[in-house]
Image 1 (cartoon, rainbow, N blue to C red):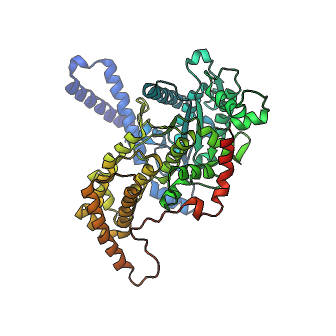
Image 2 (image 1 turned 120 degrees about the vertical axis):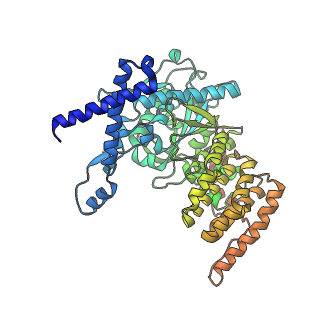
Image 3 (image 1 turned 60 degrees about the horizontal axis):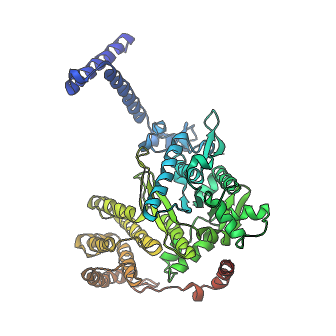
Length: 525
């Protein structure tokens, strides 16, 4: 096409845009500035459309398999405005961790911190002294460090940046400007955060240590308050720098190389009897400290001590592409934090859930409300169920896994309403059409669903509707018949509807001795 012809096409499109705008908005509402913005928007939409069309994931994959060069490009969520990920099909990289948090994420993190504090003030009439946070890698990879910023804001420090956008460090906000106490934090990082974003953990650890070292009153600085309560319970003495450093450890994870919180494994194996068991499992699996110059040091006592002052546990959602039933790590870690904080503090602990899906409108809700939201919009949503059923065996298995995570939250937090379990039983076990789907595609998934529901009732996690429970028990006998028919002649055991509870003290060699030292140290305080 000649340049003159191209200009004529562009002018024609411009004329049609203005003509359409006048029809929709009318002459009175349309002015020169509005037309200019419409032209800018049109150019942006056309650019996005071009980059979508240029996406060639299969071609790039085959080119890479053939040893060809695949151009690099960033990753991220286009639903959060990251149109720089287009075109897709490039050899994507995650991010530069030294640019976390971004200035935009800092503003969101400030609002998250303010929302947590305001909610607790409204409900309890006092500031939370310690917020236990599950710091996931998605906060860094998807949300540019909103959660990291929230931690800074709670501590009363502010990130500083170099001219090129990289993080320079932080500055401490004066207590007089902060207008509230500095809130202590207990952080359980995910395994991926631990292994890939050490630079982020180091900066957070530096901030905690700096706040703990401030010469401020306990009423103004809860970090320092809790550090000295542990080191100097009688009010005397002069702790060493090493003792102060250890008492101010706030970043914990599983042992290096381990990617589990432990609680989910115990829940799925029925290897627990009461909340104390889950709390102690959480300490034993996650009592390894991380930070500047600290990599996976055993710190069981320090984690238990930090949890003693926790008032709130926290996690958040950043996109509808994932939710708290998407992985067992959510209930294993956030639920484990909650169970452990309740047990070691000896008091009720709030479970909060943040929502930054729209960064302009940060929301804060109870964990129970978030569980209800996802149960309604996904797990019990007929459209979602039909979509899963299209995947046959895999879809049935994924439904079963999600229901297992509902059970996991009930076990670890007691925040699942009875009606949710009632509706799960009615929808997936009692309903004939769905039951036939499972029978045909994956009867083992159906057996797992029904058995977990029965276990929830037997453990007192679900006060079932009597009619629903009777129907569930009846249908479980039918499900057992399916399984027995399919495994007839196959060697191996079938668990059936029995719930065999493993008692840690009696059934796991050495467990009692391992936990005794931690209990004795806490009692000695």
